[in-house]
Length: 254
Ligand SMILES: NC(=O)c1ccc[n+]([C@@H]2O[C@H](COP(=O)([O-])OP(=O)(O)OC[C@H]3O[C@@H](n4cnc5c(N)ncnc54)[C@H](OP(=O)(O)O)[C@@H]3O)[C@@H](O)[C@H]2O)c1
Image 1 (cartoon, rainbow, N blue to C red):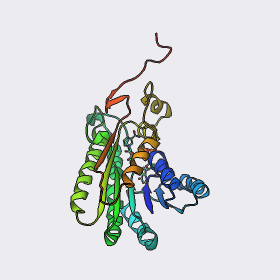
Image 2: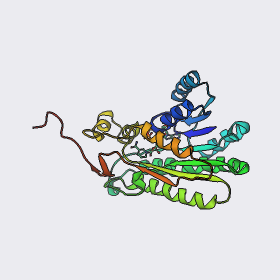
Image 3: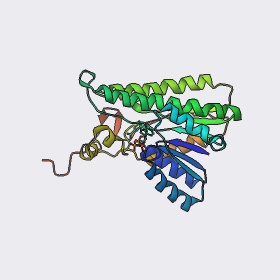
Image 4: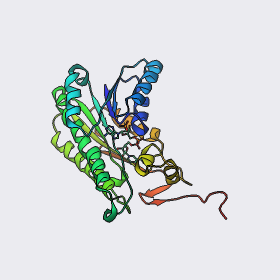
């Protein structure tokens, strides 16, 4: 059973599709339950797998713990947790940044990831088996102008991945970080609050797709039990660092 946070869109949704195609049962959580339910219907029909969906805001520790406590036999079956829910909000220098955006990013990308991990890990430890996959970012390795707080949250994901691997040594639980560069998903629209501005982020270059990242997740998860993939960093060929991107001039440019 694979638990995916943030499965209602983008990378989480692509992971759900790829794992279902391999016959794996799923628990999908996000705030937009309608999107999860329509995805679940499709995956059950196409692949005859079990798909359980729950509306969950990962920033609410009480909600996270109550959900897991309310379905003990279901969540005990979780072998792999994909801690994917996350977001960027705003793109401003710190001196004019919006503290509300900072709170949302810190609450979701760091605290939400910790809350879900805290509740699921004891169940995995009991079984002496499990795999935590954390969605980091190249922004958690190299920062970029106005990336500040988003970048800091993804540096935290890198730090937590390292800490988890140390704390879990001897338990049989694997810990992997996936660190993508630019992936065209709902991410930029959520960050910039505008579909046109989001489209411009990928103008003239070929970004990664959510499926490219799901490929890496599925590969890391599918290694034999004694193999722990520590981290996978994936850039589009057109991107050399978070802020160095090769773009073609528009066809109609003078
Ligand atoms: N796209 C990129 O370029 C890129 C690059 C590097 C890393 N990443 C990371 O990849 C992860 C997935 O992002 P994406 O690109 O697939 O973006 P996306 O299409 O916007 O998907 C984000 C997912 O996170 C969920 N989410 C956000 N806040 C949540 C909350 N409080 N509680 C529960 N779920 C929440 C959203 O679901 P609801 O809105 O339904 O709750 C959605 O399913 C994020 O951690 C992001 O930082 C993305």
